[in-house]
Length: 237
Image (spheres, rainbow, N blue to C red):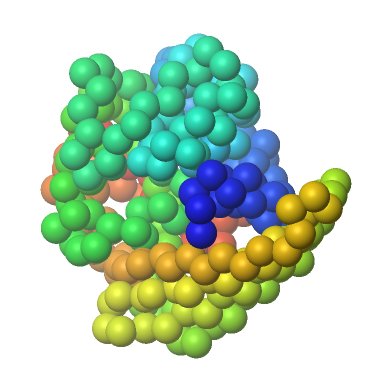
């Protein structure tokens, strides 16, 4: 799929699913402020098009984003003028400053390819937090919860555009390639078909917790919120 199209379709599909970015951002903000009431700055890692940042900026004086896709960055900057969105890879970025809190949502952490990359990412995030800083990560599925051969489907419309999305997930050990097909119908452009491939990895709860601990965090795993895969919340010692 062309990335410029994907950035627009991404938002359209997930909003069509009823994803409540405002409520999610509020829950994460409350978790942060419960552990660090004086927090005034937050970094959203793998921020996508900035949908969570639009609401976290209501809770924190300074919010910034980090994203790898140039097209996602362009859409985020267009939607959020004045909010810095940096281009970088979560495994090895360096923004030259620290924040009171950071978050990585949408199970983006599942794109890491190994436990080594997971630990490197958590260490990199720790370097960007001040002492007592709070890190919130939405994990992807644990191995025991993954459904091999899972099929997801969406049909959404907005204005003169209709999108059908179908995905199929398979498992090869801990690796999960997800093949996604899109049919996009536009009044002016007609009908197009795109294919996208996502390479995900299944980490265990213990692997997440070990990565947090090795990076210097005291960590909790919370399952009583609105996130299907729960949330890991770490406080930097």
